[in-house]
Image (cartoon, rainbow, N blue to C red; front, side, top):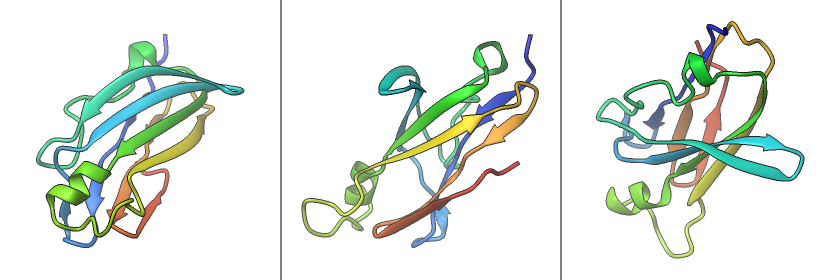
Length: 119
């Protein structure tokens, strides 16, 4: 049994607040195949209420988080003209250590984003 798990959160860097109410989908990726394995919505702290990939489902491999940021940007008046510059933001990453905590946050603004492997 593994003891690793995956968490994420979203910070709205333009407003300096956690990004609440953003849907996130997690996919397992194998070649050109994507299989959705989890969905969640960020809470008032910009985090999911539980790990998006808990220990019992955690395994090494390739994954993709898709952050559905467009509705949030529209709701907060940051969207600008359609089509949005950023609407769905995919981040593909690999998990190699089944015993580690992986944290993949999104730092978001209407015209840019960044991510990193956090702790």
